[in-house]
Image 1 (cartoon, helix red, strand yellow):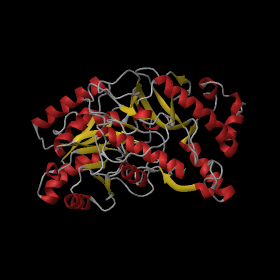
Image 2: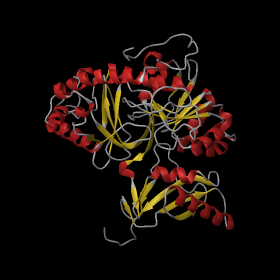
Image 3: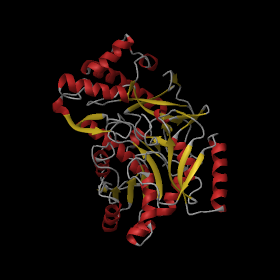
Image 4: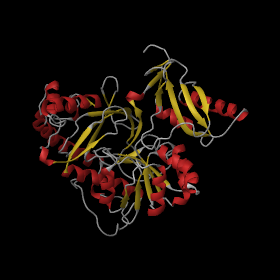
Length: 468
């Protein structure tokens, strides 16, 4: 009942959950466990990390002063930009990027992971063997809920470098007892399809945009539709879109597979969607509450937002029972909506949806617009559109001089058909996002496809001779 990682062998006995003792805990029991672990964690962080100690000093507090979650909320939030500055400061002063933030001794660190770096310099995670075991446990919980069991083969088609969804994900699949095929996407689309043909996986883990690309390319490269790969599960990861009903429907039809959205790499924040239709049951189930304290704050003021049903705010998390580089009141910049009432699927726990990134937000005539929301709106008209698009800005956001320019691919329409498509899409944008973009239509296949995280925004190059 203490939430420690456990091992399971042999038959599953019909269990729906990997770690029933923890995953079926009541809300009161989870809150009590989190509080006890938080008290130990803040003392550990304070005693072992100059940066964490500095955070307490800024709040004029010591660990013994933290007597409630309200007291804990006085500790200043750490951001990714601050994390990067600390890495550089630590490297310059101590010859190591971890000396100021890591809590474990160097000889205890067994793995270093990194964010993808698509929004800047990668931030690094330091893990002890204990932390690695915790991460493995969280991956096992997610895939077990989806129906993965020992004997299933899973093709991992994400980046396999230092990305948190690389090696940590492979180890988590193996911890469950399933077989991982870590093909990665570095070798290209044809290699992914070749390895899929040879190994006959039951499941694939990839970005939803790469999944859409595989549906397009499989007939060209193999002469057969993607449905004939024999996949029974498609797990979306690495970017948004996997919780959008239209995206999931397209992937399900294209592969003939059950589609799940999930998140969580080499850290303590993990969630996975369920079998209930996304229209009826939004979000992902939060499976790691025993190792991660979740808060919501106002993105502008950082004032706390109660974790109530339907609440929206910027995610702040704290690792619990973590030894290497435990994050404390850390903001990745993700905007979350949470649901605390029971899910129709019967699975316990709260749910969340990642709405977008606070630093990706654009403002068009006073309306806040997130690129992922643009992607979801466009994809509602698939396959009349391919789903590939770019938002083109004259200068970095967030403020955009209207109209918002969107370059996107149609699905093969022309003439009056394209005019009707544009009218329908314009009306969708008016209804859902309250803006009227300017569209630039391109033939299918005009925009590059990315196997990693798709970058939806590009800055237009100035005309030749324009001073910078």
